[in-house]
Image 1: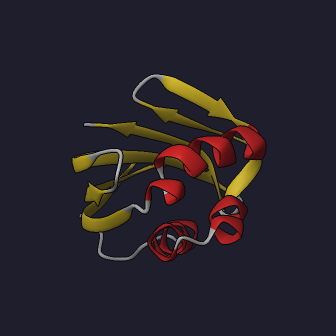
Image 2: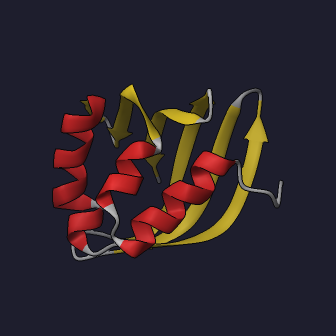
Length: 107
């Protein structure tokens, strides 16, 4: 397990927990995708719509429990608490050029 957050993930966690949508979106490449348990949202507009309903809009707080990196993929395991869902989740990230290219949320 690594103890150092890659910069886009550090900004991502801080933005989510602060409820800062503009900084949250700036963490993602313009053509990034979010896969939330099989539901895919591509591009900033779709990611913001999803976040407005289920992430930042749900007043979520992400408490990081662990971080690991394997072959260009970073996995963040944490406790998510919001008005939509509360429980342990795994967030898998693909990063490129200092931005999130892909985020996959699973259990």
